[in-house]
Structures are given as structure tokens and as C-alpha cells.
Length: 117
Image (cartoon, rainbow, N blue to C red; front, top):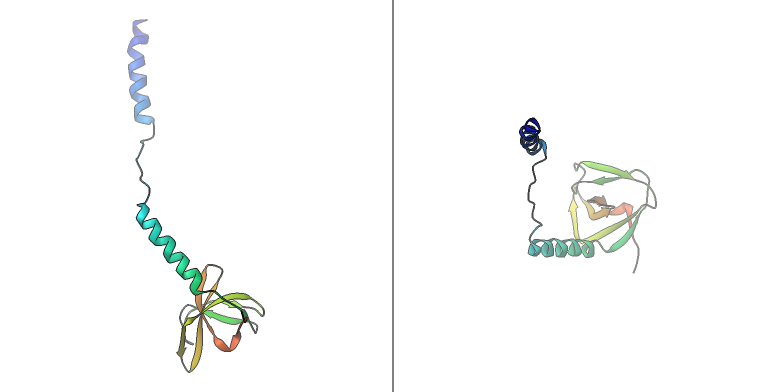
């Protein structure tokens, strides 16, 4: 019985060393969440004009202009959303700020048909 009494404290100490360490984590400040939600809502409203791509292999670019990095190529009748207020004329071409899924970029206006509301 004496041996058992000596082993139990050692086992307890070993269990404490092996057990995972608990780390306290706090949720984000409620005020920050409100700001992020407002920003998301504003962004969603800004890209509220539904549109279709007219043409095959239309470049969807990171920035407006022919030198903008191509993010992907969109096909005919692909549904996108446009923010007309962010349109830019670069390289003599009007570029619409567009949203496709969760990706934001620019498409040359000649390939965009904005669906009338």
C-alpha cells in the first residue's frame, strides 16, 4: 500500500504535464463586428446592378486596364454584379467594377450587359 501511495502523486504530476494547456480566447469586440457588418452591407449594395457577360473568354482583371492581372476568364452569359459608380476609363476603355462570386475585379464595358431594373 505504501508503494501505491507514492506512485499516485507521481501519476498525477505526470498527467498534469501531459494534459493540454488551456488558453483563454476572447471574442471580438462587439463594436468591431458591427462595423464589419456595415461594411459588408455597403459593399453588397454597391454591386447591386445585375449584369451578364457577352462574349467568350472575357478577361476578369484585378485592376482596370489592359495591363491588369487576369484573375480568370468569364464565358458568355456568366452572371455578375456591377458597381457603376466605380467605373474607370483606362487605356481608352471604360471598365466596370464587377463582383463574381466572392471575387472583385474589372471587366471592359463592351463585354458587359447590365440588366435593366
